[in-house]
Image 1 (tube, rainbow, N blue to C red):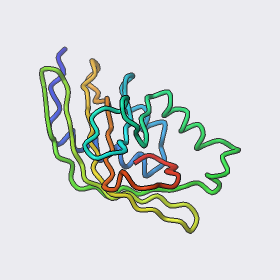
Image 2: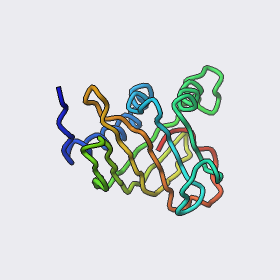
Image 3: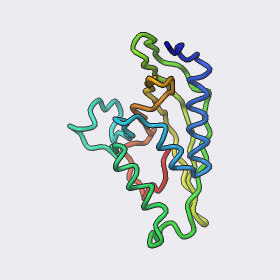
Length: 163
């Protein structure tokens, strides 16, 4: 049975739902959105094209994402007692590219992201690019989530959660 390609609205809803999972701290459900070869990338420089040949703020595969999620829940993770919280404020995602034959899609979303813990609140702004793939079972998965911060080359404190 052939799965019909997702509509633009389904792609947009996927991106919005992904942000909601993060805001609700549902990290296992969020991680399940990634394909087996999925990556989460936050470049260190504007226009950076290669995460392996240049330093990045973050470049994590599923294993590293699992490790971070486990650390966030750890009893000895004192930086998370009390736990951090976050909020994504997204512009409507735009479908930037679609290849129905290959089952590959890209969305671009401008965002403001707030991460807070106790009386400290940090605001980040930027653009997220989701490269989505249609799996054989008809489910969309994230092959790459690239987060480009407006001030990516600034000095940052610890980013505890996921943008």
